[in-house]
Amino acid sequence: MVNASPEGADSDVILQLLGQVSDPEVPVLSILDLGIVRSWRQDENGVEVVITPTYSGCPAMDTIEADIRKTFLEAGYPSLEVRTVLDPPWTTDWMSAEGKEKLRAYGIAPPESKSADKRTLFGKEETVRCPHCRSLETEVVSMFGSTACKALYRCKDCLEPFDYFKCI
Amino acid sequence: MENPLLSYTLFLADNSLITGQRLSEWCGYGPILEQDIALSNIALDHLGQARMLLQYAAEQKGEGWTEDRLAYFRDEKNFRNLLMTELPKGDWGYTVMRAFLYDTYHFYEMTGLLQSKDEQLRAIAQKAIKEIRYHAQWSAEWVIRLGDGTEESHQRVKGSLLELWPFTGEFFETDEAAIELNGRGIAPNYAHIRTQWKAKVEEVLELATLERPEDGWMQSGGRNGAHTEHMGYLLAEMQHIPRSYPDAQW
Ligand SMILES: [Zn+2]
Image (cartoon, rainbow over the protein chains, first blue to last red):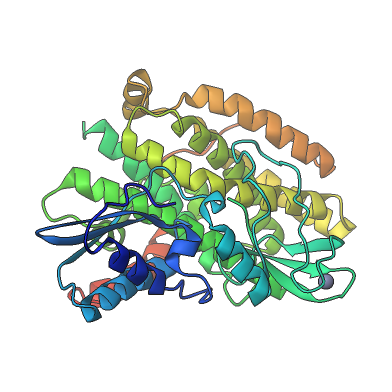
């Protein structure tokens, strides 16, 4: 979700550069697909990009910040400010439709529909579609997968295990 | 008295930091790969939450304090964490029982903080609650699985529950800072959290065929820096590298 995208000479270039920075843990997704870029602006002092973490302890955030710097530096934008904000908290609802399709093609089940209300304890379990054969006959193996953002599932039809990008 | 907001922020931060540090001891030792990964992920969530809170505490403290300095260069008596969080990890049943008692408390505490009039604590709570819900669900499911499992698993979690129960009273203690902050709408009402916690704990224990222990004498002291004999060892392990090489940078 990107707010306050400014109009301006470099606006397209900045958007394009942000689209080149990928999530180090799921490299098919750009940080725009992931929805962690809140806003950016440009003034006489340079470019400011505001990002938000996916998970509190996500170790990819430092890498993402460094990658944004590198990308902009190489494109001739030496003064860059990357700011992290927490509020409002990131939700998988901000992932773009294109991002979800890229995830599926990559073999990771994208987050299903809207994020549920996380303020109630023990909500209903989600039905997750197998990214390989599209079956809905799947079961959760572990709610904690290879990275903070993923859960581990298994397909009962094609028997393949797969990662599911958790809804938060 | 120290600034109540700072004191309360450190209490929350230290609970997350010490919980994350303890849980990370399971990394590479989990009973099965999936659960090893689960605990490492949960530990990472706690450390991430600790970082946000310690950054906020450092900001309040000023004078060159940073999150790292707060984590690595404070001594035992300056840590405010609940005693339960520092107890050794024990066996798998003990770890999940502790996680269940604490996560359930943590869930209702953070739910209360969603209404905090302090903007930063509210923002951190909004971020953290999504993760804590997963933790609380995970540990409750394991308590049910082990309690309603084999004779051996039942006995072990039953023993853990009895051992840990005297450490639950401290969850709901309110010091001067907490009372003042509750009055200002910054901290939640811990008596209210206790009611919610008790109801959920009883519900899960019943499913796990375990009996809730009677409230008796309760341990106390963490908030004031009076820790158990285990805390020093934990800090020695956590702090020794930055203290040996204080100028080292990543
Ligand atoms: Zn399948």
